[in-house]
Length: 317
Ligand code: AN0
Ligand code: CP
Image (tube, rainbow, N blue to C red; front, side):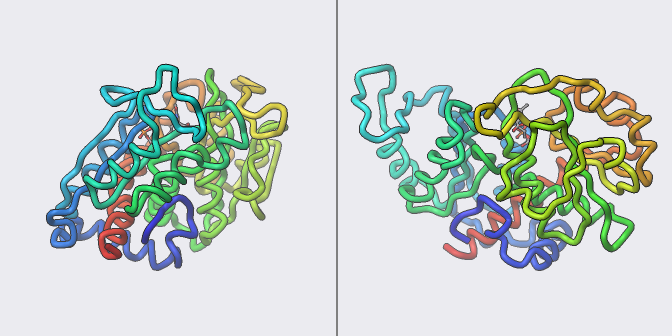
């Protein structure tokens, strides 16, 4: 595997789930693969889970790890070609990327949407430059438009907790005070559309996601109707994708917050969220603390999804 940015990069999803189960049972069983191999993690944005779970996965595989927080201690990077660099940016990413590649064997990159331009965000400019110019396998640790390590961990978690062959999985928009990217819901839809689940997305009008990720999913604008017979509720906020409103907050309607009354409409559904979560905006204290909440095992599976991806990249070196 040379790049990991979406569900297609995993190939056969059932094979990937089987491999994840094997890795989880024997997470230190592949240490020979990573001896004297180095992972570089490059962060343009903050992180708790991705930072720790990716390092842990690499250590499980016997790798050395290096972490660069670009905004803390590195030179400010210019990312556009052709710019006259007479401003505050000291180095161009076109030198920085091959230099970083020269010190490591695999690179993980986190670079969120900037919300300056939809075309720029959806071109995945930064991630694509790492793929093109580093000479190394590159995986997304959340790009501008996708968060595949999260969605793969989510799918592993659904596989572990499902009680039906084909569960009903409902992704619901929920309110948040700040503009958030579409990366998490895009990737969750990307994965659910390829998984053996009945997938429904519910959100207020105006919050339609990019059709390349929504594909054949059912859209239900009535949240309470969507929750009926659900086996998994996956809550997430995102900002608008629509032209003319890209990155905007169209609603902070707290009637969309996931609470006990709404969970009671489901088929005793499990509650999921990628975290970090704002309590009593996205979900009430009662729901996230309830026995139905699986947000902690979901986060723990980030170590497993990443270990599968790193293992495959190490096998392809
Ligand atoms: C980010 C997002 O919504 O994409 C990261 C989630 C994993 N969330 C925040 O910035 C709060
Ligand atoms: N879920 C997730 O990616 O969390 P972090 O932003 O803390 O890494």
